[in-house]
Image (cartoon, rainbow, N blue to C red; front, side):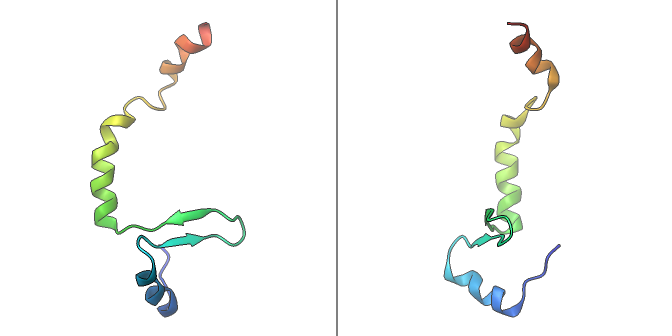
Length: 63
């Protein structure tokens, strides 16, 4: 887990939700509180069933 510096913690209140960028890769992230993340995860969990199941790809590859 990464701990925020005092300056970073103060900056969290400037934008909602806070957005950060990795300066090396230019990847962008949106930070959300852990309790909100857990709620969102429960909401989308039913949508992820068999998402990475290789058996789901089989009918597509046979066409």
